[in-house]
Length: 231
Image 1 (cartoon, rainbow, N blue to C red):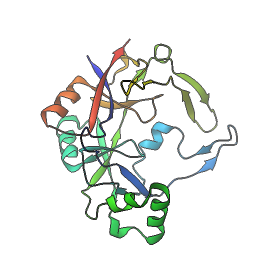
Image 2: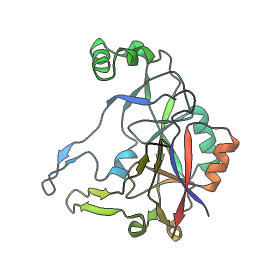
Image 3: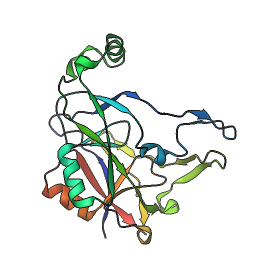
Image 4: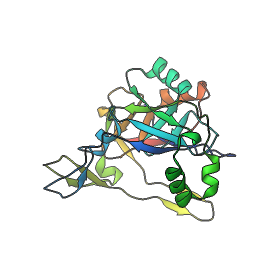
């Protein structure tokens, strides 16, 4: 069985749009009395998969892919949602997003965007964005922490928060490419899902060769794949 780490294709000739959060509700923020860290959810994996969020999002440009990056893992187009339901129904779930157009943004919000990203950024926000959906995944395999050089640095018994230290990639200025440290998953721990996340790798998405083949056959857009190792 071949496994892949999934990353965003930002667009080879023309940059794809990103999803920008306009507002997110239902964050129950508290401070853990033991570790002193602000808690939104007991751990990052649970945070990403909370279906109860009321998410409002605008797009930062008009060039759309089927899988798009956002601050909340991946969001998918209606076409990608249909393909995922047809082929991977046991592995995926979805949550609605309220898509915000340029005309929906208040003057105060537009000023904040201009102050942060510049006047041009506001002009690129579309008035009629297509509908996207939050892609919700399951924990599908175990990471080989030792081989992957990932260290658990916080495991709070009170709030359940877990933080990890990860090796970083090496960026080559001459080739403009990043070499990433190897990631190993424990093959015997795989739960049978063709697209999934792994505890210890935050919002990173993984998939099987079957997912890669279906993605390619249906000519979906927005993702890149890098094969990883198993142990």
